[in-house]
Length: 126
Image 1: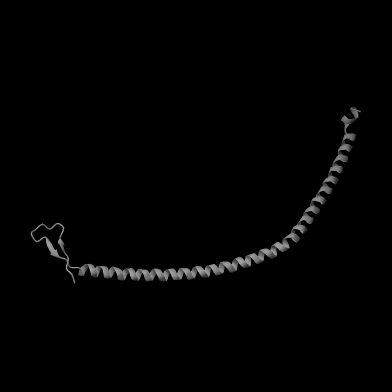
Image 2 (image 1 turned 135 degrees about the vertical axis):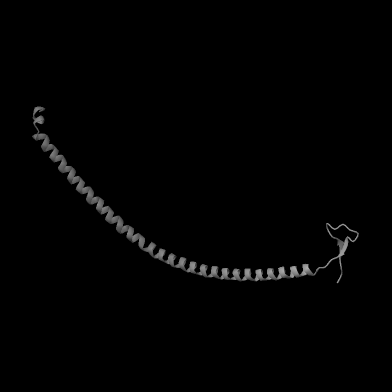
C-alpha cells in the first residue's frame, strides 16, 4: 500500500508533510456504498411493484373499455328505433296540440263574434 504525503491545511510547522491514512475514508466510503446498494434494491423493488400495479390497472381499464364499447354499440343499434319512436310520439303530440289550438281558436273567434253582435256598442255603430 502506497502512502501519500502532503501538507495539511492550516498546519504551519516545519513538519508540514504528514502521512495520509486512508482507512477512515475507505470505511466511510464502504458504508456509503452499502447504503447506496440498499437504496438501489429498494428502488428496484418499488419500481417492480409499481410496474406490476400499472399492468394490472391497464388490463382492468382495457376490459372496462371493451365492455363499454360493446354496450355503446348495443345502445347505438337500438338508438335509431328509439329516436323514430320518440319522433313519432313527439310529432303526434304536436299534431294533436295544434288541432286543439285550432279548435280553441275557432271557438274563441265565434265567441268574439257573438259578443260583438250582442254588445250594445255594436248596435250603435251599425
